[in-house]
Image (tube, rainbow, N blue to C red; front, side):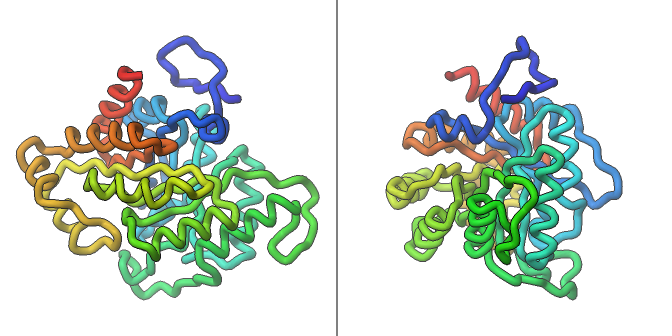
Length: 299
């Protein structure tokens, strides 16, 4: 159990992210992006939004763009009373580095990890960087799960202390068979939760739920907040796995956000029976706070 130092209501013991999912209670996570900077500080709007979430994802150089690593902000979140989900990709580290990061993170109180393959460097701002990709996310999930079960490193060498962690994987926002098969594999090899790319189609969300409802893992569909139609069109053209329909783009053009649609998506995810939802503010923490506050007011 943890206490959140920034709760506006009376401080009380609350369930961890893991406990909430294991107790089949709808969980909300939010995502933060560290800056391309040697300094790090949370804004007030980010802190207020994080207070309303059950856990906070710290991304690991998404799209292959160089930003601060995911470890330092995760440590800062722990110190502030929040519960981080530290992202680790296979793109930038070999198996030795990944294990080293996991052990160091655990030593600083980080319990949740989202294990991803990672976007190729050619998509980012250092396109000539050499990728590692010693393994993919399914292999990494399997190896970390074995590490948890055996308290041994990837090569079978014993650890000096028990290693425990709550591990998850990612997914594209599609109900197509190849992706559903990958989710099944991740669950089979030890992923205890799945956070998806953002959905922009309520019908597709329902199809995805039907395709995954028998998989033994907790799934949190992604909801991306946008305030620029230009950005939405860019994501449509350049980011794999994201398709934003014209009606959502029209909402953004008319109201400078997709807040109405995002609220509908969150309500739909809860009604269908998903384990929770993952909010991606894209820097718009005020909007994220609005969605989270609305969700709590409707309980």
